[in-house]
Amino acid sequence: MAEEAGAGALRGSTRLAAVIGSPVRHSRSPVLMNAAFAAAGLDWAFVALEVAPGEGAAAVDAMRVLGLGGMSVTMPHKREVIGALDRVTPDAEALEAVNCIAWDGDLLVGHNTDGAGLLDALAADQDLQPEGLRCVVLGAGGAARSVIRSLGAAGAAEVTVINRTADRAEAAALLAGPAGRVGVAGDVWDADLVVNATSVGMGASPDDSSASPLAADLLRPGQTIVDLVYLPVETPLLRRAAEAGARPVDGIGMLVHQAARAIALWTGTAPDLRAMDTAART
Image 1 (cartoon, rainbow, N blue to C red):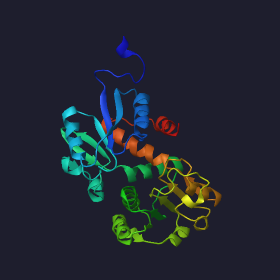
Image 2: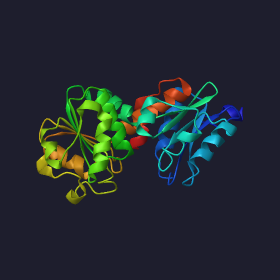
Image 3: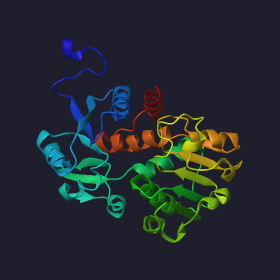
Image 4: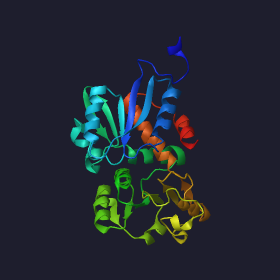
């Protein structure tokens, strides 16, 4: 029968999930999510929906009306959807940001999977746990705040926040609890783990040293340097890290693992991480 032809064929029974944002057409989420659904044999499909600023709450209402199985949320809607939800998790509440919406019975619950996704990626792909490590996070925006909170909760010895705006750095550092503090670029040298959670380096050639958020002489062997920027996969920062003898880690891992957490929340199924990683990289 035509309805049974081919993996990923859409049917009347297909459950739909979506990512909302503005802009959102560049998102790799549909590639990741649909690869995971196909690998698991799930009758689900995932699309990107352009939702204008200020309409995030209306998109949540539409999720209820249309019966969407799940929703990912990106900028600029991560905060504005909160008021339209029935409940948010402690992480999402503390961060004032939701990047995943899932059903719990008849209720819509807001989650934040970013920071946990990074920790999952470090554990699975690098065999690295933050407990006892000296960590530096560059930036104090949404992704940075999620990473800072997760590192603090995971038992990092220090979580040093470096940001151009001091008051934002101070507010972000509080999310790490007693381990959090504000620092300067020179603190990078002493760190075991460095995470770039800024957009510096996005779209730049790996050879463009001016597009690295850190100077090469701040990096050293034995460090793990993570760049959450994943376009390009090898950023100027990661090129500098490799040249310094540090371990470079690209942003695809966090992208995949935070999406995997969303799929598990929506479907109750652990997705195929290898299929998702391959889809993201190709």
